[in-house]
Image (tube, rainbow, N blue to C red; front, side, top):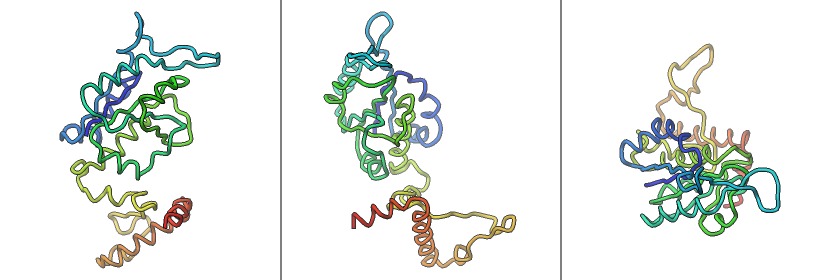
Length: 230
């Protein structure tokens, strides 16, 4: 898989792409992640990428020329499955979308910045608009990292235990169950007996029930969604 991220602050990605799972995936050759500085395609002496909005108003808007030049250059080099724009008014990014995107080959991720992105960019170049929550951030860099991490960790071979990703929260429309490790007793708090029983069927049943109870307490909307789909 290859992910090309377009940003006005590319240095933001240096450490995250070298450490953790993203760094591991890159070193293993399982994922290529390249960050492109939009200012390299900027206009004039100062490589301008933004300008005041037509009609007035506060804030600046990213101009179309740098974005078109950058994306068209990338598309001339290879075929991309999606051009994703991270924006507060996009569709919610969830585990199902992460699963689907992890099976793609090449992705472009466009990070928003300043007040907005010229609408002609969104209408012409962007094929998917995603948000990571009902909140406005200073730019799309953090969402782009979240997107990349959620996708790359699903690529076979990235995680040490491939089954781990399949049992995470949201993979089954529910939150994950509670997990315990040694010691079996800590400061008077004990591990549920069933987890120490060695009875795999009973353990799996307990985990399913516990996951459903936690989901009911914390995110009942997920269970409502599951029932609607059934």
